[in-house]
Length: 88
Image (cartoon, rainbow, N blue to C red; front, side):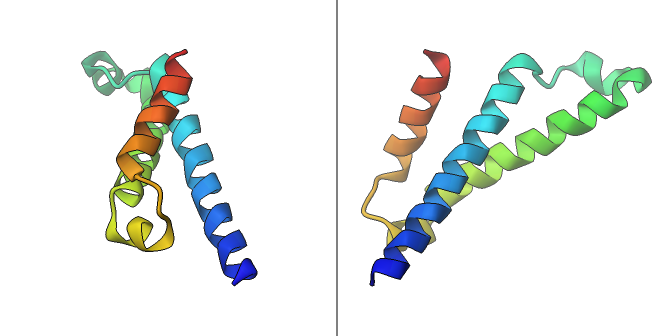
């Protein structure tokens, strides 16, 4: 059982790290219409889209039934706490 708990904790910790990294990047590089319309910004636009996808995937995970099966934590509360940490 201890190995299972370690694996679950590692999955959740990695998801939090990925989420924090994505929202931190997007805070400094928001997706704007100008970014979509400027061909010189393609590399940055691609990074923004990648981070939006990472953020969205993490949010889906924390709101999923799988997360509820893995943990007794409230995924919505966890998301809110991570966002508060990044704002502060």
